[in-house]
Amino acid sequence: MSPTPSDTSAKISEGRWDKALPESIDQTVHDFIGAQNLNRGAWYIETCPQKYRFLLVEKLVLFAIESTAADAQLVCDLFSLPNMDELCPPDCLEMAFTLVAEGIDDLALDSPEAFKRIVIMIKRVHLDRDVERLARIVMKSRQRERFVTLF
Image 1 (cartoon, rainbow, N blue to C red):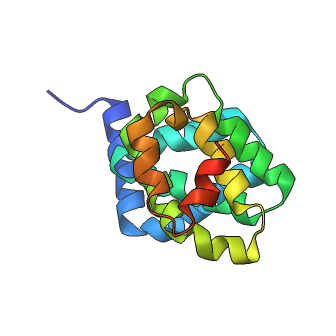
Image 2 (cartoon, rainbow, N blue to C red):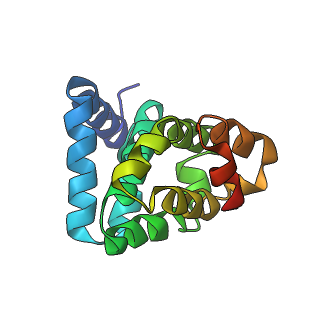
């Protein structure tokens, strides 16, 4: 049985990601922010190979924390899309937010809104509803108390 066009496209897309992962993720975030289009953002997540999606989500969260309020809102709106659960299962989201939480204390030095923004994004993807997942994320911060009070 020969591969279908969608199988071939998926393999080409995954190959592109494998060859230059950091550049692919950076370019995807840049393209999404430039497009200012939620459907396109969802498409970028969907076409990112599953094994790398947590890295793309991590980069989006970091961008939202370090960027303008308008760009942070765009990322939050992307995370609020109804199909986000399908695009990024809770395990994927937890991995991404855990990576960000590990550095949130340092990020807050340059971005005073860091804790507030990460909490908003965690709520948008509903990770706050799973106490165990939320605890694992929060425990990565040296300022756990500050983090928790925002929920």
